Image (cartoon, rainbow, N blue to C red):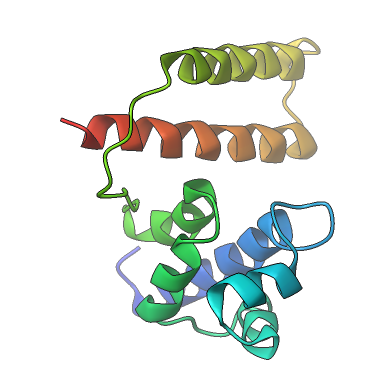
Amino acid sequence: MADHAAMQREVAERQRAMFASFVGKGCHTTRAALSAASKVPESTLREWAAGASMGIAGLLTLRRHLPAAAINMLTEPGDARLVSIEQADTNWDAIAAGAAGLTFEICEARKDGNVDHVEKARLKHRVRGLVAELSDVIAED
């Protein structure tokens, strides 16, 4: 996707999807809690959730308060993922459980021979989380 305008549209679409998936009632955090923790005004978060352009400083600020999978949704159109520079012990059990859970969900989705759009969205969400966790493991080397 070499076209700059196309990249902007893709990032804005993913930004809206990221906020819908991770910020709000029943999600990872609420807009009010994210605003309080990040010191980003709620009005700015609302604009970003609607797809307004978010600068690199905003992305890096939110990185401290959202899961890596959320931030990776924004960077994937550029074939990039953020990896923390802080070293942490790898939780191999959590990785194995995540991989097993993904395998189960794939089998469940395919048992009727078709992966519908709802199942595909759920699988993509699960994969993003696992990829974010695995990216951290690879960065440890």
